Length: 518
Image 1 (cartoon, one colour):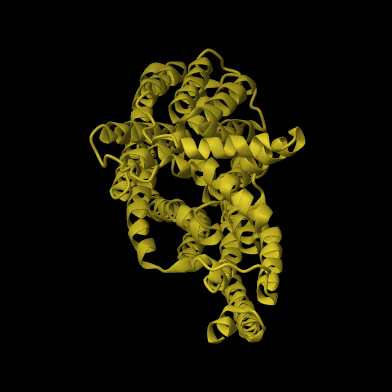
Image 2 (cartoon, one colour; image 1 turned 180 degrees about the vertical axis):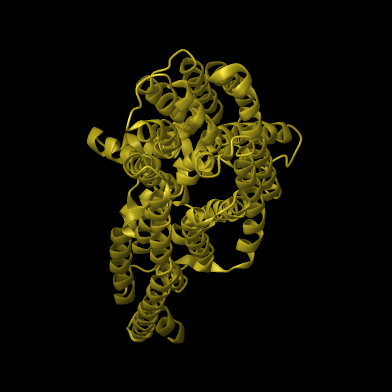
């Protein structure tokens, strides 16, 4: 608004058309003061916005650059599909590994906290994927997608391979939970960023292929793990899974960025940094990579808090459902079907929710997340109410659907809340906030099982956080609408003040309007 006002006022300056004015008129003096006030008010913010644009890689696109929309890009899509599928396929199939870990520790005195300790292995791995997200964003910006993804896949490979040489849960906290979890995070995020280098008009199709293909892994890996686990044992199973990550190291080499560098932006940034002292340069770099301005938005804070609350019970079914079915229904042959159902409907939910989200304007998209969290919480509470194995299958179908809706709609909502320039930072911080409750949920459920001897209370309580989180999210559109109305009212007042300033300026002596009449 202020830029438009200044442009309008400048268009009235006769010097722009070749005239000269020996001394500034009162209107020009008022304009000069206004420009100074606006520049002082906008200076730090404009500078930060420029740096954010540079950090986001927008300067690399170049005015004439067009993504190839295919060609080698389809190989990149295949590599990204393998990355997403193998990482989250292994994570979502941890229920099978959970039972195998407990069997691998059998033969001694029963540990009363065994459920808690075993669940912590998988929870750490899933939590580290989200916890490392803000750091991965920095590494991706600094050293590129290919190096970051290949390094992450190598770390994940080492973590899975080393997990096969120990039977200690404490060691596997580090090898599987920390190494595999961190490596997965560093391999996963660049696989999404690189798609924007090769696709623009077909970016939705590319993302859909990656999402759908990764769900095929989630559907097939439970049966695969169940089959080879009973044949070759847990140690060799970890070695087979490490082969997935070794293949990912090679596929990550295809993540070759093709956006041309922008020399002008680079020189401008260097000139800007050279004109500052060391303290200002350090502060500028810290703001660029740790931009906390997204937390100044009330709607973003509420949204992030609501999601962080909801995911406390999100990962509980993935870890404990297989063991629950074995204890409750004595089902040890077909329990893998539950994870297949979760993966299948999750893929369906991702495809459908993306299309539905495109049809819902503005922040009303958030009601899709509200509905998915409320239904997810209700389904968790329904698990102990199922009196047959088939009933649990139906519940898993709905749980997977909720999972797909929740994940797919996250990025569009972030864009609506903070805008495209800050969306990457907003998503990174959100994933980091999700890490702690997502890590804590399964061990708490395991502790409740150890204490009460069954999973009933664990699943009932796992349904409470998603419902609370859904209720918190439901107020975000209302607050956003109220803030928009207030902003429009303030904008209307500013326009009234601007019109009065312009009219008074035209009546002053020496202004272009009066000179023209003279």
